[in-house]
Image (cartoon, rainbow, N blue to C red; front, side, top):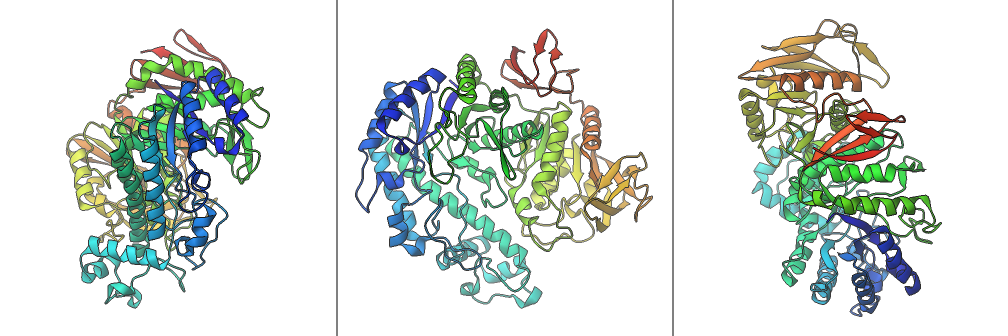
Length: 635
């Protein structure tokens, strides 16, 4: 079975509407509803007074309708009485401002009263519902990522640091505290990164984000263990969310959930939405080891910067099946019914304000039938790819530091561009996580964009990969620093110099809008470097600008493989062309040969999903895809 459904908030509606909801869910083929995510104040309206009767009726009603439940613990939004009783459990910003109640995520994850209250409500829900016949899985919390810099967090941070570093001498060395007279002589002197006179210590900031990831994980594990003890047969998960503000290393968290569940909201109303869907699906599949679940996306809107874009007819289906093709165990949305009020009163929904007589609900009904017909793929995973991209959350965090050579450095943008190039080259792509596992076996090509932090162990794994016949593509800003942000000396890209056969002695970041050309006419922008070759072959040179005549793109034969270095930012077309060349050299073929430019093909099990992302019909063998259409064929 492929899951189909999403977040359902019955506490916002009278029971007659709830009854209609079940009827409409059955009509659409919905088979799962996420319930309780933001219901704490309804479940525990006063300290120690619990009202589960309404939830009993909801679960019974859904079960009678043949709909299963992902039951959430509501700990992402403590009720007003809790925050008034425990103001010390409210988050404090880096500026020292303690926030007040009035939104979601109003908690400090390190605060003992919050952790105790979260465990209590989770335990009571486990005792009551662990064996309810509707229960399909537990959904702990919602989108972990809330930050806090209070004194309680500071104490927890120090405990974490002492466990990690062992002693202050080791910490001082890792943080280079000799710079600016920051050497610590007592653990009590260390605080979370807070507003300060000028630039913060980047190693301190990075360690804090790693700490927060572990602290949030600890809160999840506490609830997970309570739920699992009540009924070990029910899987437990939480929904991952991406964003520069999210201090969660999902690659490390993945081992702690029974199914990797991901929320994804594309933010490009144009063709970029389809590219983002492919990227998110491949990344989630990497976290999940081949299988994952789309827990939330917007069914009929795309949230662009500044406005909500209504999805065109068929786009809900195309996006949903795009996730399924890439290994998702279904398609779930936020949310089932659009609310009449509240902070997100215009958020997307399967049943909008217009009601079921609407384009989105009619398309949802058709999609439900499609997913039911595709149920056999639920037990199949996409085949392992021959090409992998690296993803490393700590490198992303480190490249958000304020004192970098350019304010335009964009870690996720660099990885997405490389994925986009492979997407347009029709190459199936996996993700690997060198900060978590150094296993690169089975891949012919690995692409490492902006892999800023590299451990000695990871560097050795890349070296062995290339020496054994692999093809490696490394971009600028890779291999620069050790995991604690200390720079590798001797020239960039320190960890990869021997594999790449180059030495970079100077960076020349460029203002936005500045472009130069390579000697083959390829335009480049944003970043150029003075590269000295040390065994590498120069593939192209800078044709103009301050580095005219210097190497720009190189290739180094190393052992039985080859390693490419890109010292500048290529445009999409040029990067796609280069990666086509590298993958062809490695013997990697597209999913299907001779696909039209606007058609994407994804293989899962014995099926091939064909997506026409263009505005005109396209033919793939005997299959004619209408504009914007999807077809699923046998391999």
